[in-house]
Length: 318
Image 1 (cartoon, rainbow, N blue to C red):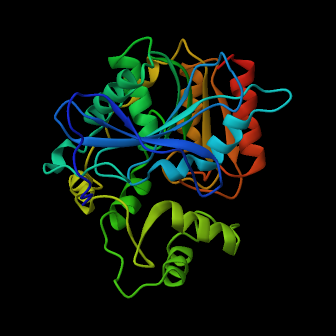
Image 2: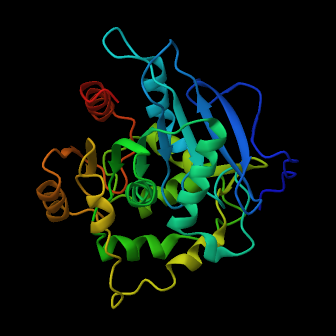
């Protein structure tokens, strides 16, 4: 559990010193109070040049954290001769990354995560966003359309949709919360990840596997450790082959009037082509990019995917 001392009132955002992420991109880490007093964390990446574009707010997957979005942040905050620089803000849901763990794991749920995010946005003075949600963060993005109309003005949704395939959920349930052996080195962890995820990411080279491992895990005394509360596994306890999947279509439909880009891993076992087709039918303006040789969820660091994201944002004034 994160043992960092709690922030003292008054409530608001406390910024740490400007620092560089693993790719060398400058940002300011921040913390803020959730409504129930839990201390949550994120990163604020300033645009490299003045920009009139709304912030791109990144929301990670179930066990993920801000490091997932480092390649996206590097690309967006820099801008180019043809694309404006953008501010990027990342949030770490309670129980993940630098955010405090919750004593009650039942609060590890999408509704709570959206409420926490809205508190953080208010503290940062942000009232309109381009949302960028990976998996769980994509669900939070869709729910935001229903709970907070007008907040999401455009959305990039990474490998999630109106229906969630049970096979992928069961695979995720099988590994969430499993402790890393204390004797494991980083090389041991990378070797294990290659075996466990070879079907999802068959084309990664050794350097990419090491980057993947470092984004998912934290370093404790030179060895890898989970970077989330293992009790997140309890939130998946009710997922079984007989359990009806939650109906996310009403939430997805609330985004019908805003530009939406869906990224789908070509090998994904969580977002099927048939679900993407249904999404396109319900959202005629939906844009879809399939990421070759990747499963759930695409790692957002290959040039074609980053180019597609920038192109979508540019064309939609996001």
